[in-house]
Length: 226
Image (cartoon, rainbow, N blue to C red; front, side, top):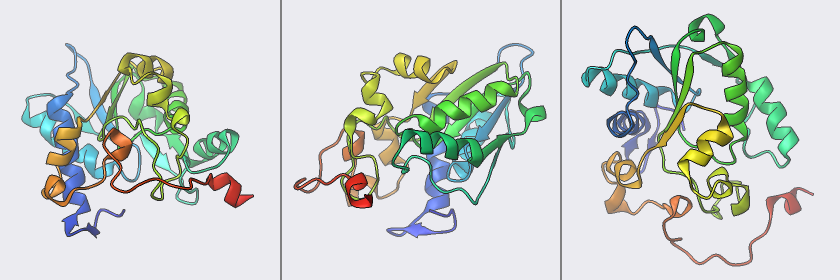
């Protein structure tokens, strides 16, 4: 959703900023002595979350700043909904590029909204490492996705999810992606970031919650495409 839109009466921009702030409270990244730390977003959905992360980090006394480290090609669509792994990897390669001068020698905090299969994240890590950063730290503004979604998002096979492949072990996910650290926002903090989150009963099934409606007659999207 665009940051200027509203969902169920809630400002998307406001909620995403709050998610970023909550993430910085739970999982801050502090620079070492004489170290330069920057925060970048995975454009475009994480842009305002990264702003929130930086705002809260500075409030905590952490020296950091927001930088434009990734450039997105807006003519390439969403990557994780592509049916084949090869297609997903190719789309990532054509979708993003790095600003090498911004990243070289820096401790880089990458703020993203979610990780599904991990395809995009793995390719991004490869791109980022080519730019020569000192460290790469992933911060995700949602909990790990551990269940399939049958209500419209195209990740129906639970075994395809990176969190499931890694036994829901954060350290295994970190090693799989090849980053220096990774932290997710807790379910409690995520819902607290949405003013009416718990009251309106948003679906959290993919994050380990319960499905709000029975799941019957599951059909793979690939079967329909074919």
